[in-house]
Amino acid sequence: MLKKIFLIGGFVSLLGFIGLWIGQKILIKFLEEKAQTKIFQTSLSQMENWFIRNQTETGDFHYELNTTTGQTSSNYNIVRQAGVLYSLAQAYKYHPSSQLKKTIEKEINFFKEYWVVKADQPGIAMIVYQGKQKNNTEALLLLGLAELIESDPNLKSQYWEMAQQLANFLVTTQKDKGGFWYEGNSSSPESDYNNGETFYALVKFYRLDPDPKYLTSINKAANYFLKKYPPTNFNSSFFSWGMAGFANLYQVDHQEIYWQYLKDSTENFRTSSIGKNIINKNDSHLRGGWGVFLEGTAFTAWVAKDKDHQYHDQLAAYIKNSLDNLLSLQIDGPRGKFTSDFENIKGGLCNDSLCQSQRIDITHHNLSALILYLSLVK
Image 1 (cartoon, rainbow, N blue to C red):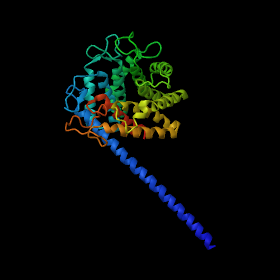
Image 2: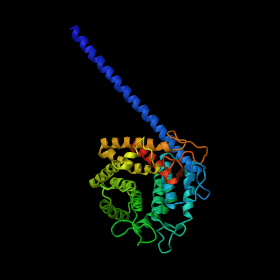
Image 3: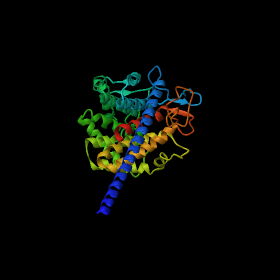
Image 4: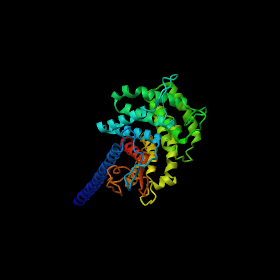
């Protein structure tokens, strides 16, 4: 009898030890995740401040900076200026601040200077900068305005008409097969970037304004893109925007083909050379521009939350580790390998591991990737 009691007591003690060990593991994991989140949020705030410091008097942003001198270059790209608006609007939705709002409003006013509405098409607007028109400028602007409208209902009355005019314009740029012409007029060719950005912008806006004309355009594009961009062929220009578009379309229309396309395309990216190198902490050729691919991966992880929990967890870990690696390129960041005495340089990401320059698209894509991880994936 005593032996039996002893055995039972030993078993209970063992269970208690195992329970304590498991509890410690859970606590350690919780504290590690909390510390990691704090690092990401610090990096995010530093990127926001980098943009705030580098906004010009007219409302756009210094496009490229020399990290050695702190000086700006003469290079410029209007499309990437619109991309900044999209990322900052995401940041504002994630954690609103009066300073961010002021910065965003100032950039919107910059674009109003190039806003063109034709007399015979009052419901359509486009951006014409220095006599040229690139349609993914309108797509990225629409994405930024949509994020703002989602973030604060009070902003809807302020930006709804602008967003609607941009969406109406993008519909008119669709070609017969389903893609979108890129610049100038309908005879111009498609662009993989523009196809993805316009597709995502229209889906995003359709979720705010379910007008059938948008859905008709979206479905036509989706059917075309499923064939034009097969998941077996990683297309670095289309991938992230395409994943964003199809992930949002899946929220509207739960077709299994969309989910399978997201998963297969994302797996093909992860097994590509970039997909492997982005997570490699020993890679001596790390590029800040790879952050854009984490945006697309995050949208797939968002859908996987409901479709495949195990796959979601795999993608979440992949995105977290990749971001942790890319943030080594953030100057004076919590994970950064580089420092600077120039205030306008601090907080932005280097273009690559040589850290000779910074560019607005490199930082805004990593800003978006951080926000998507923290808000949709984690």
